[in-house]
Length: 390
Image (cartoon, rainbow, N blue to C red; front, side):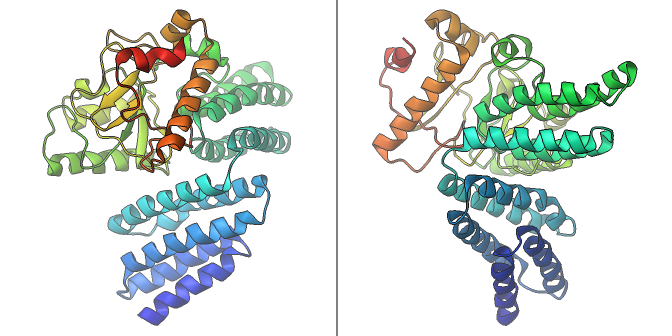
């Protein structure tokens, strides 16, 4: 069995350097053969993920940023194919290990993600619409694939890309459909984007924060440390996690470890698992997939009246795009209070968190923008927490 395991990983390493998608598909075929014969499936998956991480980094070091992005696209788009025939346990191991590997590779190889990613996405979609605008199904499928990629990106990149996508879609579809059919086609495309990102793609960033039904965006990693309402023991929390993961996966989400929910005071409003799943499965709410990180939430999950969410030694930032309640400031309120634009507040928040991470050399990072975010005990008082907004 050891020889077979080495062979399957060795072949993958060689093929990765030639063609990423072929390597992944061949791995899946070999993996299925080995596990069908009673092989050590868990061991193979872990070796595969470790190998993928190292090989992706090695390949990308010799390529430009656009090629980095293409490699990540290939890996993510072929993830679903890899898991089609896997048992649930193997799929869970793969999802956790693979996402960790992608995050590590992403942080190491992509330095100017925002600018390059926005440019790449817009070029991709422009080409896509030129070639397939008359074929609505092709447009929709390719947009879904691109949305899966975008959901792996920093928040600002997502917003920038959505705005850029607006004009591309409008100009392209309008040339291929009659007035009536154009509206229907446009609506279908916009629905895809809205379901993935929870925003109206036709809105600008500054107007979007007033219109979108989002508030109290909480960075949550679903793990054994999560305290959800009256769910106090690990077994119930684990059941909750499994249900959520299955639900997200059914929506074609590939990153299951960390999500953002769109509802104010979400954790206090959950009455039961089934009510939660039923509510969020049908109302168009959105899960944004972020990078890896860690935050433990309890029932007292933020300091009252301040934007920073603090919980013991760990913390995150409460991002509220609508009017917040008495427990926190929204971006809109902060904008009115400080005179800064929404984008300026986001930029200052990110800069502050980068500075903190650099000063304290922390490795336990919660990512809001795909890079770094950790405020821990940086601020000794509420006044200190708000200083950088003034």
